[in-house]
Image 1 (cartoon, rainbow, N blue to C red):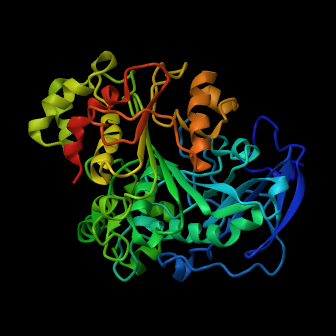
Image 2 (image 1 turned 120 degrees about the horizontal axis):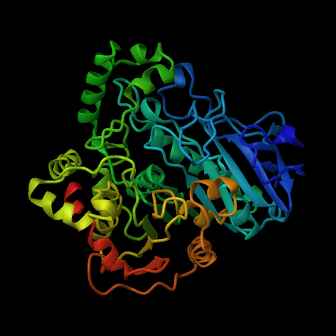
Image 3 (image 1 turned 90 degrees about the horizontal axis):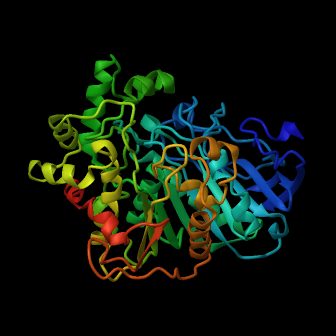
Length: 482
């Protein structure tokens, strides 16, 4: 039934023999696909298409479908082009870009079961990415009794650009709207709206931390898991002025009318440059969603929310084919990250790894001790350090823990990008994820010393030093965060 699968068809043929299946939800009648006892309902809109007058508006709730909605095909994605790296994150054309995909056991549909729910938020610097690739396939978790919901949200200027007269944090409002859809509809798929875990990686991990920081999301999820999450936000006035100046360089008026007249790609591509010191697309500190600021909100809003934080050992290692940086270039790189001068020398010593390279990964890893310090020792915060080197790169890189988390390490795209993931390491992380989503306690020992002393528990995935030792090298980078 290949007509049900494209685009983004799975190479292993899992869904090739799929048949249609139906469910009745508050959103309306839905038609999905079933194979091997697992169902997928793809591209279900949770809000009206953000086009025309709605492009830079808050998400508008989608009304109930009058006819059966065809959820056998992937929904449209905010990302309009392929991201250009090894992880498959397909782009799908169309205007209905605010949608969810639900994976569930077939037997759970309409059964009244109350299975735990995982809501996945993809990464991509808040400017790219897609939740429909092989690495985010929820079929394994669904077969294990977890309802998986993957969401889309507006990216780049559409989601995070501060434009006069338009609501800020539209991407954040999309996350909240998607979670509200889950609260209203997930019981029809056999899910428990009171047992929702939010999770995401990189910018998706940043989304998890942002949702934990805003009072507006209280009650929409029970706990959270951030894989290599970022901790970034900007004051509204700073972000608005920066965007105005960037658009002026392109001859674009920084008003809703000026931006509205141009296609998404015509604006995003010229601006889509990684600006490490001050990213252009980030959540904005604003009284409506983050009255205390996003970072401070982790202290004031989330201490009672169970949270797992993780990072990979090497994260964003510089390409080994690039020439080794000179010492002054390393100092300049760290300065561009906002690291105070008095900490730069120590940071270079701390993060010098293979071939003497300096890695941006220290910044990803520094998020973890910073969040621990914000939430305090009374909160339930657990940490893992993913040390499993891929057989392709020989390193434990950014994103390498995603397939183990989802249990999809046998996908051909995973093997091409990472290589073989040892079964023991996969099981260690995947089983911890399933247990946490189910609301179970993780058997991770509490660190008693070092930068992770405030953690409830910590674990090393793969062989290596203790978690506290592993994250000590990130400590100099903590000074980058407010």
